Image (cartoon, rainbow, N blue to C red; front, side, top):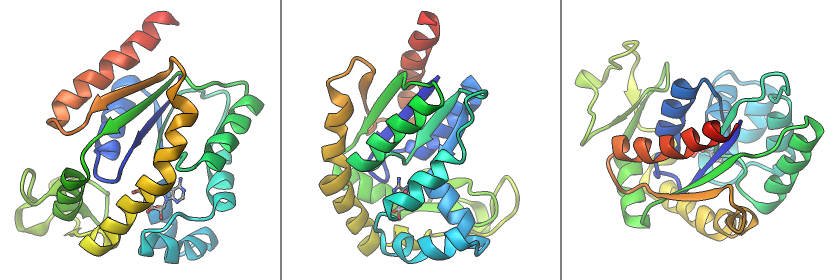
Length: 216
Ligand code: AMP
């Protein structure tokens, strides 16, 4: 089972990917989370990626693709990709990586959301600096700025500032949206309205995943 969640920053990819990976036992591969960890740990990859992530730009394809390829293991075979691929080159690289591992994509879902709502969600999002749990100052505040799961400090992600969030939304429109056509004509491609409550989006996504498992 290989599933891909596509969508603009703020569309809820991370939240839905966590839900689906825990419900269906999929390995959640979130390139943004991996970069944030590598940056926090000051690894060679983190040091190379830092300036791009901070500026809301895409990290160069060779770094991203190498990082993703190293995490695939054909024996495991159940992955949920969140934040990758983000352009046509990455989509083509993914096809080659999967072919090499004898795997193929079962489901690609685009989480559709308006730019205004995406921006509103990003700037009100807060994350735990320790465990990455996601909060929202309007819908899910962290009492006293502390994480309910681990007690860590809950902060505004550096690239969630309004200026950088606007840049990231532009990158999505200019670079990632054209890539969607790579998948759009195939039967594996689905869309959901991600402007709804997270629980409603989860129900819609579960129906797609259930139908894949029912076929296998
Ligand atoms: P995200 O958490 O998915 O919004 O990603 C945060 C940042 O990580 C992005 O703005 C990029 O700088 C970087 N990033 C994540 N995934 C990719 C990717 N597939 N290609 C290039 N850069 C990425």
